[in-house]
Image (cartoon, rainbow, N blue to C red):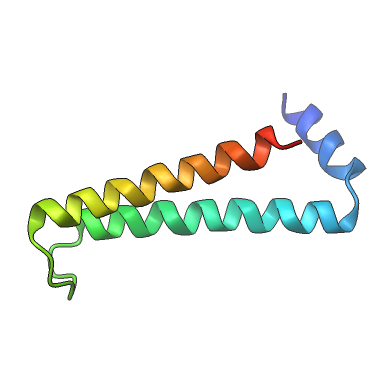
Length: 74
């Protein structure tokens, strides 16, 4: 599977490779931001605890939706 991914990655144009890397980067950014909002207790965000958890889960779900949409588009 790893060699198939590498072959497909090398067959892509420079623009497609750049967009793939940016897509993965933003997936990781949204995922990390959601986890930070949920687990960082001293985060200077004036929201009740339940809203912070809901917002963090919303960001995590959004990151997975972007990830799935990005790879099912092809």
